[in-house]
Length: 324
Length: 310
Image (cartoon, rainbow over the protein chains, first blue to last red):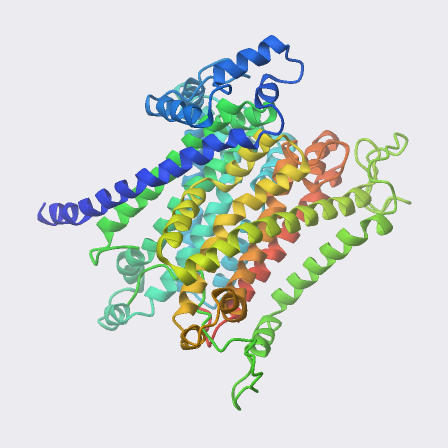
């Protein structure tokens, strides 16, 4: 209890400072996202309304998006909408963007969660093995596989998994998604292959970082002391060293959240899963500006939130103070 | 006893490579360039990676002459041929197009995308970083905030969004990937500049009234080249990955042009008959990204003062 409140007292100012930094950050992000409209070549209203749109439809789009108003007014109404949770209306789906995001979110959260669990289940043991056996063949195997893992685009791996395991061997479904409410196994069955395809880069990244930090920690004095007084090597590694070695890994995990979100775009397309990634790809293919902007703001918000959580975790775990 | 993650930028502070006086290296001291080359070409992995990248670029440049067939011409009498068929070394896809020729033109598309996107990243990322690192103050604060904000966009999603508004084609895909690189190059160069600016030779140069632009070009730039080279190498890998992803989604190269990404997407149609239209481009993508990453890693290991691998 005492240590917990001490930790909170240490972490709170850190959280406050980070939250303050978020205000200008999200401001610039919003401005950048809003500015996407200026990248549209030619008449934005024409492009958004689509190829065969009539002049009336184009005019309606222009009025609807406020493209006939001065830029600063457009920006303020965009920000005003965001603050009220209004991300605009998608043209391709004729649905409010926020509704689209909320309906599809469980799918993508499931996929990302499976990918992250896979990444941790593979990455942490592999990193520990390589870190303990630094320089030996186990280390080399892990290092080589993680280097290959990092270089394999997730859509390439996904395609191969879907075709070989999904289609040829028919061990697991190659496409589609079943909600968790219809049972754990049907849900997991559909998410295993896409989860592996999405998570392999994160697994490789975690293994690499853990290997480096663990082999550093194992060279430190307190580890030598623990070994010298006769503690089992297993206890030293898993109880003492790993706690410290995991700190930089937490940073990596936080960064990977953003990459996983970006990766869902291709992985969901490969596996025919109708989640946020698919929504992003569909809106991009259709040039659906409100949907694109909404997706981007949403994804950045999630990424920023993940890095905030990482910093707080860091603050709790590291009694010596500031991480950065 | 530091548990802070090791910074991704190795310390690069050393005697400037282009010292105007051209003083010879002191005895017992290898020149930085020599030392870099010795370390860099040591492991077979970096030599292999160098070979793969060289092969990729060579094929990219010479694709028009090397390719045995026109990559978009269909031959419906020769569909889904296996590799080593007469006249089609790597077989054909489900429209009877020559896989080897498409692979070569795909190498060209990937190389174009990599070159242009890295150039965009360098052009817009490096100058503000040099200024921010050397002058510090308000410019640094402004540029750094913008870079931080841009870094919080998931990279692939940012590229997707930019392609979405600008319209799906290869040029826009390259620009979009380039924009992803700007804040990354900025951060690396700024950090390296900050490290260099404290050096005595910069102080000396500034104290005798050397104009800022000269200091930047002559003293700072040569010293930020090594960490930047590492980043460029990794960026090339990401560019290949991003271009193939965008083309796979139909947002980069437009049919019937060949890209490794579009080949993978089209190869699915032939899968039941022959896996090669998928295996060939998949191997190319993985090999090239792998080679770029290995190059970047071994460059990072080879620059700087004595710095042994962990």
